[in-house]
Amino acid sequence: MTFPQLPPHVAGLRERTRRFIREVVIDSEPAPGGRLDQATRDRLQSAAKDAGVFAPLVPTEYGGQGLPIEHWSPILQEAGYSPIGPVALNCMAPDEGNMHMLNLIATEEQKKRYLAPLAAGEVRSCFGMTEPHPGAGSDPAALRTTAVRADGGWIIDGHKRFTSGAVGAGFCIVMARTSAVDGFPEGATMFLVDMTNPGIRVGEAIRTVDRSIDGGHPHVYLEDCFVADDAVLGEVGLGFRYAQGRLGPARLTHCMRWLGPARRAHDIALDRAGRRELFGGPIDSLGLAQHLIAESVIDIETSDAIITKTAALLHSDPKAGSAMSSIAKVHCSEAIYRVIDRAIQICGGDGVSDGLPLAQYLSEVRPFRIYDGSNETHRWAIARRASAGRHASVRAGERYRGDAVVSQDGGA
Image 1: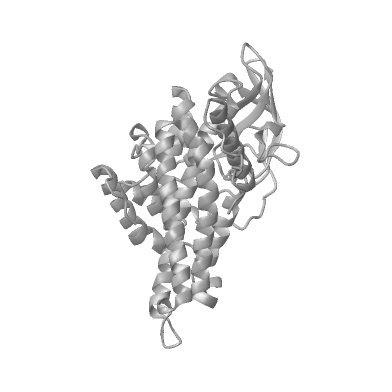
Image 2: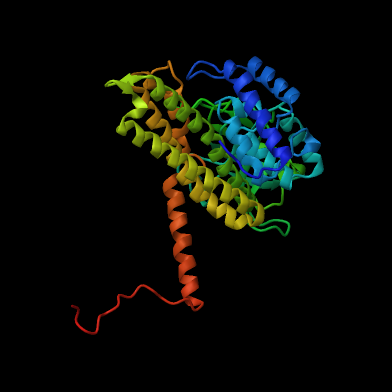
């Protein structure tokens, strides 16, 4: 993994992270399919603080490393080389995305109450957006959870599902529909809801193939859930705008983290292919294996390149970067899956056993094609933006190029 022209402090952090993951974290991994226990989590996070690699994306005033978005990828890829690496470094979803958004739009009092303990690893959080059909899923406009103005605050009613991290979380950022009130527009509003609030409860678990997110993906119910006015995150009615500001970087950090296990799967395959012999020579001397290896290198490098471009855009032009993050999410989620699948193929029967972690990695990354918006939804949005952009260019004077040229000499 090479990252040319990194500033010295970023290169140093990347090297420290690399050593920490390989020398400390990997030996603490649970068996494939298992979950990280709280005691190990606490021990690893304490060790990460001592190693100077904890909370790489969090501002320094909250105990983090303060990395700007254009330098997130090298660090998160190193963290993701172990499935528990992002947890150890406190840069795992949904906490990472919530910390980013809190830093951008929370009041100073909200930062003190919610961001500071989250950044320190003292609590976990969740994000309440997805709902049962016909509520919000890939289409946020279908949001059915409501918040109604009450004396001194709001009353929230709704039903969320796939609320990642909800079991054991300290608070939830809840998205609810609000009417036009007090001069604010009708729309969606984000609320900070403590999980100790009597109006919110964690419901049924949803069993999924992935295991890396602490707290699972359960149902969450809000029933006459009263929150005070100071629970509003940002401004009333602007929740969808804030959600886009959160989801663009969050989609990209998923790509960064999951490229880590893709690299590790590829390393496992290369090690295996270099030592195992078949038909009188090592597997990596066979053309079919070489094809699989080469395709994986291509998928890894193209994913890395699009992540780098998207991160730079999110820094310089957040709107364009958010659009590009859809392209990155679709490409990376599918390319990373292919890399791990090829590694399994190269490793044969052991690849689908729990003797190697590859089958676990495949289970972990498969939902990424659904989470944060299904790939089909993103393709729809990508195509609409491409068509609209070209139509606008032609209307502005760009030459229309869709007509066939009719030969005047009848052809030869």
